[in-house]
Image (cartoon, rainbow, N blue to C red; front, top):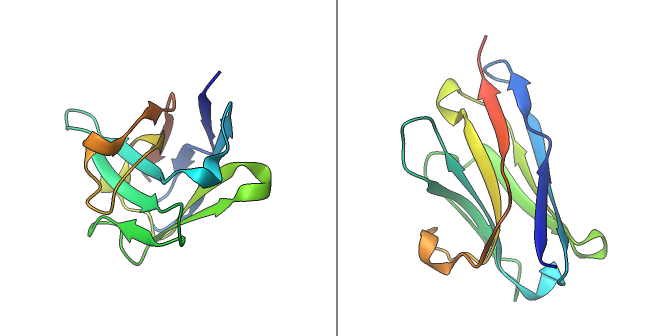
Length: 122
């Protein structure tokens, strides 16, 4: 059964860091582009980052560029999102996905995780 399970969300102060993890099961994640999306309260879901399957190229939304880093550990079938210098506007439910593109649009997503909540507040 295809499954993506996110973890690592929580409450953090502005300027702090969190690392989200996404454990994949039922498929080999290194064969697929893997991504992170987020949805803030009252807003549409948006793309955050994507890592390709072929050469490990990475893509980021302008709002997180320089602060967030996506990576993958193929041996663990896990994808990560390291988030530094967090801002209150980063508060959202973060979703791991199988499938994404460099344009970070929703059209390439094949499988969604259940999401993990990140709250940035003092």
